[in-house]
Every structure is written in C-alpha cells, then in structure tokens.
Length: 298
Image (tube, rainbow, N blue to C red):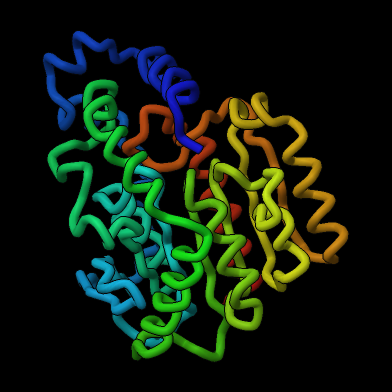
C-alpha cells in the first residue's frame, strides 16, 4: 500500500532522474514531464477506439467511469482499478492503450460514494512531491471508506454494466487489473465471480498477504483465473515472505500464476504520472499483462 515510506523512496528516485525540487517548481509540471512521459502512457496497437464518460449504477449510487473500447466488433471486458490517487488522465491513457489492444475497458472511480471527479487535476502531468503532499491525505481518507465488501459489490455492478454493452463479448472471460491498494481487488473479484473472471493482474498491490481471515491470498482456492502478481522491490523488502506465500497459494490451488519481484522497480512504478515510474519495467509489466489477457481472455 502507498504510504510515507515508499513515497520517500519514490521521491528519491524521482530526484535521481535529474529533476530537482527547484527545477520542478521553476519549469512546471507540464514541461517537466514532457521529456519523461513514456510511450507506455499513450502508445497502443493501432485499433481505433471509442471513448465515453459513463455513470454506472451500483448498490450504493452511481460511479463515474471512463469506458473505452475498439470501434468495431465485440471484445473481452476488463475492469481497470486505479491506485490510491484515483481516476485521472494517466489511468485513462492506460485504459485507452489497453482498449487499442482489443479490450473493452472500464476505468473506474472507486471513490464515487464520496467524490465524483478527480483528486488529481488534468493540468498535473506528474504527482510530484508538493502535489502528493497536498492530495495524499484526502486519498488516504477516501481509501479508508472502502472495504472488501465494497470492492465486491462494485465489481459485480461493473461487470453487469459491461455485459450489457454491445462492444463486450460475453462469451469470453473478463479481466481485472489493479494498482497499489486495488491490487487486492483483483483477487477479491476473481474469487467472487470465478466463472466470469478469467484473468487478474496486480501491480505493486498492497495487503495481498495479511493475518486476516479474508486476506487476498486466502481467497486463491476460490479463484479460477490466471494471475499476474508484479511486486515492487521495496515492497518485497518490507514483506519478503509474501511472494512465497502467494506462490504456494497458487500452486496449492493448481492455478497458473506469475508472482515476481521487479528488481529496481519501486512501489508505484507503473503509472506514468508517478514519481516512481520506471519506463522499462512498466513496459515489461504491461507486456506480461497483455500476454496473460491474450491467453486467458482472447
């Protein structure tokens, strides 16, 4: 989970890339990011896509979401859960890229019960030290309103919405991907809907192995999906036993799963607006997800 310790790691990495606090403040976030924003944020496989802002009914209200899908045909559905900073341009870009690879993607706002819209303004191309200091307390507060149960009820509603869309091929399994706090959501939804969810991908996911009775790793026996669990190096350093517990859980359940620590990648390395973003390792993680989805969904 994103916290003050791994945030300090991320800021140190950010500054090591040659952008100091002083220059960051002087040239502004947009210009600062111009030379750093990787292809992973925008590059796709060339499919023309349709983009929509939609409202999805749930048991607790209406969730504002971004729905993006290929302009032609029917395709596997994917729920795309953002990290603690919520819905924002970086995740829309990532969702669009996934749609360009042949998926009908719903990027969701997990905080809709308390807030429609974004914590991060569109003008902020990177969540730098000062912006993070400003918005992280609110993100942590909003994250505290969520629970394993809200993840499941929301996930069911998102799947129900997707399954009614002409762009979705309901004969194919659905996928789910989560980052940071929502890495655990991929486990919970796959366990709750084992006949519908065929693939799950967790990137620098927090709280995957805990002492709780409903710890995500304890849900693996209920899962039928293939899985990718991509772990940040500094998260592994803080909980080195977790990867072994996860691997054993998948092995015991007879499930195909990749559980891997990405050396040199820190918590938050995947989203292109993160201080910890590592382009090479983000591209590798993206490729692993596409391979999993291609095998299990397409």
